[in-house]
Amino acid sequence: MSAFARWLRSHRLARIATIVLTFLLPLTNVVSAAVVVMSARAAGWRSAAIDVVAALLILGGLVVLTSGEGAAPSPGPAALGAGALWGGGLLGGALLGRFRSVDLALQALVVAALAGVVLASLAIPDSRAHWQPVLQALIEAAGLPRVDGLPPNWLSTVAALMHGVIGASLLFTLILALMLGLWLDRDGDAGDWRRKFLEFRLGRVLSLAAAAAVLLLAAGSVSLGGGLLLVLGTGFAAQGLAIVHWTADERGWPRVWPLVLYVPLMLGAPPAGLVLLGLALAGLVDNGFPLRRRRANVV
Image 1 (cartoon, rainbow, N blue to C red):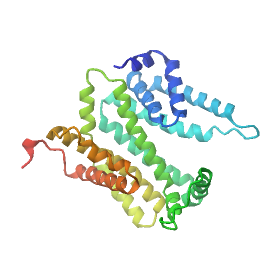
Image 2 (cartoon, rainbow, N blue to C red):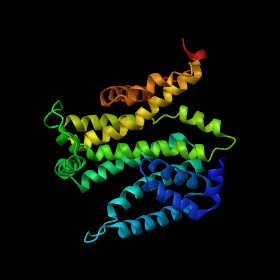
Image 3 (cartoon, rainbow, N blue to C red):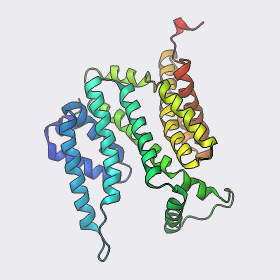
């Protein structure tokens, strides 16, 4: 176990402060969720839930205190985002601690993200009308130039898929948080946990859910069907990554091989999209036809 994890385990106030501060700082949300994962796995969901409730109260107070003069303080959106992130970390960490199953933890997070998309679609049936003005205002506030090469209705399409975009982004953050939380709280069985990540499988039920989402999309439900597909695609892409890393371990690939996989992800949307699509398809296929077979079993 790292010294940082040992210190956090023994100081509740330090845990709560770390959860809040890393949520507020740029690009550190995953650390915030990872601390919740670590706490839930080590001390149980009740103790971690106390941390989360206290962190939500502090976050709400900070939002109220830092609101500009004349502006009505609204801690709701921040609390909703933090609650979803920390709640996912609480769920994943509790399942890891009780059942020691990476499969179960990741399956539960995917199902929770799918449920979130469904609930958001019920609460805001017209995603396009709700999100398009918000996205337009963000683009104008950021001073971003208009891109003439994109289709004329691209913003409308993105707005229609925003429930899924948010769900997929949250799921991706939580998958990283599970991995980081286990690494921070690593002990003698760190290698065992790594193998569990390399061998995880989302299962055939979620493959059927992907088929149902495709049918919804084909029936014209862009917001719901497309949103569910984005979430499921994120989960299956994580499984595809596990397949690639498992194969690299099993076949003894050269140490520089990750450059071939991860460099395209940093080159922009088109190459990254193709790589992620390929990973998601590999993960989907793996549920029905296992791609992770040892040399002795390959004919």
